[in-house]
Length: 284
Ligand code: NAI
Image (tube, rainbow, N blue to C red; front, side, top):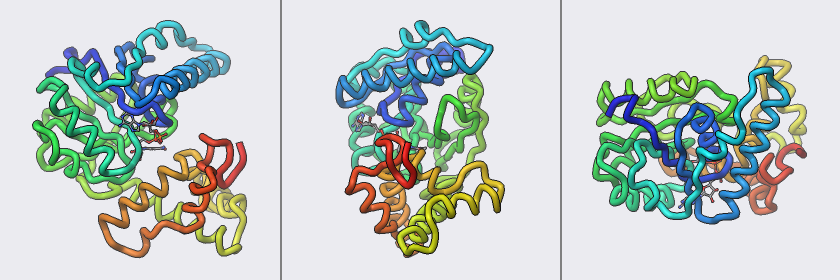
């Protein structure tokens, strides 16, 4: 497959990441089949994209064609619609069994040349490659949130991926102005093996009453000159996704440092998932 052959992109999962991915690739002219489990989720995802594009047009001199972007996104609730996709970008929740289940189905539907781009926070890519017929077509692409605004991704390569495939995917990302660096496969890769320790310990500090969320983040922004603090980041990601990711890290490494803070588990229990529900460590 060459770059020119890539025309139709299947995006699975229309949550925080899938919505951003669909928007970004549609903005650059790709036809998108956006798949989720229910019509209302797909509707709300398209509304989010409409809002994002409207906001972009209000804030920028360079205008985007809202109508054309929306028309390029075709919504579906069945994977069968992905049979002629050239590339699939999967963004379902960070739960290994759920992801494996999707790939076990996809491998019997999609065409042989199709690449699977796994958008995951921590799951080793090999776990997914092991359940498909063409494991050499599975590559991790850890997009950064919010995808329409972030121009960088962490690519994760298994030992099966060829230099040619890696270059193709890297060129493909460049078509939508995303640069990347490719690291070797391992749970949490580079980004989340580091960042989730920060977020987890920050939650413990709040739980122990050592500092407020504002104070924790201020130490990162004012003291360490990070653009945003760990708790604002956790809210942006979604506390449920952070908890799931820590559980994957703990399952893989069996090290206590990855044991998820009870504070975040309680937040999930109370529906405080961060930005997506209007309340997390901060209010939105
Ligand atoms: P989310 O919870 O916001 O969205 C997941 C979506 O997948 C939901 O709309 C859900 O209905 C849908 N879904 C669930 N099962 C499905 C299935 N079997 N088929 C089709 N759709 C299904 O999750 P989010 O945050 O978008 O995360 C998606 C993936 O991206 C996760 O693996 C996460 O770790 C990873 N990720 C998340 C980042 C973030 O900042 N939220 C950043 C980078 C990666």
